[in-house]
Length: 128
Image (tube, rainbow, N blue to C red; front, side, top):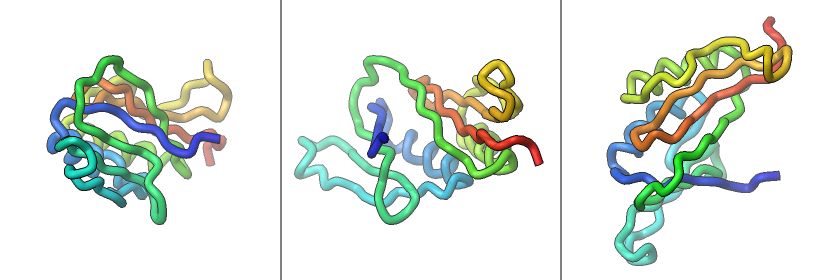
């Protein structure tokens, strides 16, 4: 079981605006900000669904682009995630739709964040 994960971003203000808008349909918000006095002057914030953050964004040089998939309750939430992410400046990397090559109930959407990280929202429930 994964407790938390995160990404390095080159422009924390731009990335924060992107993630706050893109992940809002999934119920995510900024829950914690680490004071720069404890981070060597770098911006670090944690997002999640209350009470604990599980997705951390930290200022730095992205060395590798990563893929992070966020679980959604239903297909409509994935559609809302995709629309919000695109409106926030994300780049299309695979619009909302079924992905039967993964499994029969797989429905997901993929966007690239400002640093090129592949951010996905996915639902595993059959249509209904």
